[in-house]
Length: 434
Image 1: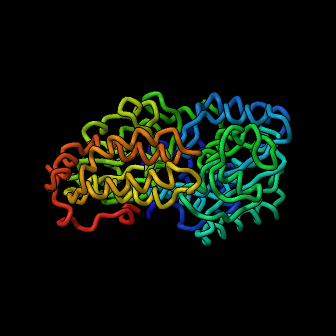
Image 2: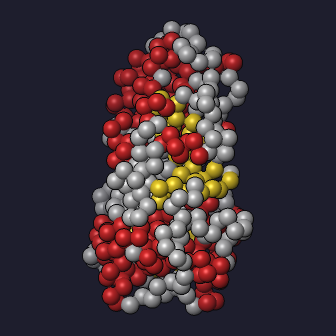
Image 3: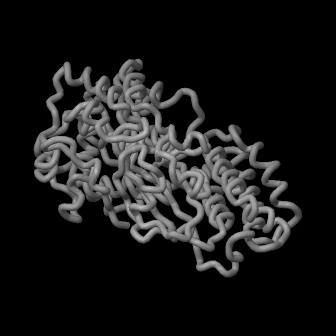
C-alpha cells in the first residue's frame, strides 16, 4: 500500500500542516525532532489550555474517524464530567480489512497520535493512557514503542502511554471489546449499558478514540478549531484519511478534505473507467452503483441520502466485469467467521445468510436463497449483543439492492444480467482489495 495526499488541504498558514505533511519526506517514521520541526512543540498543559481544548475541538466540528462519526467533544465532555478519575484508550487496532489508514498514520507520524493522547488526557483529567494495537503487526508495535521510548527520554508526556498488543479479530476493535480486554477479559464486545464513557477501564469513565481522531486533536490543540475548519467541503469540516482500493491504478491512503466528492476521491486513485460499483465504508459499509454516489460528498451528511456513510474512510471500486454479489458473499462469509460467537444472531444467523448469498452469487441456488435472504436479513437487525450482525446485514442488503438485476438472474440459475459469469471472472476476492 502506498500513501498519498492530494496537496490541497495540507497547509493553511506558515508552520502548520495536516496529517500527511511530513509523509513525503521519507518512508521512515518521523523522529521526535522531525515531528517537532514540522508541527511545532507540544502545547503546554496549563489549567486554561486544558479547559479550552474541548471547546476548540467542539468549535472544529471534529467527529470520530474510526467509523461511528460521533462528535469528539461530546465524548470528551461526558468522560471529563464522569465519576472517578478518567482513562483514555487510543484505538489503533484497525480490524477493518479494507482499511490501512491507521497503520499508515502510526507508521509515518506516531508522535502526532501520541501528542493527541497527551493533550486529550490533559483535557479530560486522565491519569492513565493506553494505546491498543493488533499483535499481528509486530513492525507497527515496534515503531510505536520506539516513539514512546523517545518521548520518555525527552520527558515529554505528562501521562505515560502503555502500548498493548491485542488479539486481532474483526470484533476486537469494538470499544467495549478493548475495555473488556484491558480489564482482564476476552477481546469481545460486552453488553451495554454502561458504555465505556460511563464505566470503562477499572470501572472508571473512559474515553475511547480512534488514533486518527486523536491526531486531529493534536493539531487542533496547536492551531485551534477555526484553523481546522479551513479545510472541508459541503458542510463537513477538516480533513480525513481515506483508503482507496479495488479497481484503481494507485491504491493507497489519501488525505482529502472531508466532503470531497466521492467520485473525485476515486479519481485521485486512478479509477478504472469500466468500474460500475463501489463499496463505501468497508465491510460494514454499503454497495452503490457509481453514478448514484459519484457526485455526493464523502461525509456522513453527504451520503445519508443514499443510506451510507464513510465509515472508516474506505472506498473499494468493483472491478469491471466482476460480480458484486460474489464480492459481497466473500465479505459476508468473512464476517460470519469473525463473529464473537456470543449470541444466536452471530452464531447461527450470519452463517445462514452467508450460505444463502454464496448460493445466490454462484447461480446454483438450493431452493430460493433470494427469498430466504429477504426474509432473514430483517430478523437479525438489532438482536445481537453488539452491532456485528447489523453491519453484516447492512452490507448484504445493500448488495441485493445495488445488484438487484443480477440477483434475480442468479436466482434463476443464470449468469449476471450485465456482467461476466462468476466462472469467467479473474479471481476477484477479499484479499485482492488490500
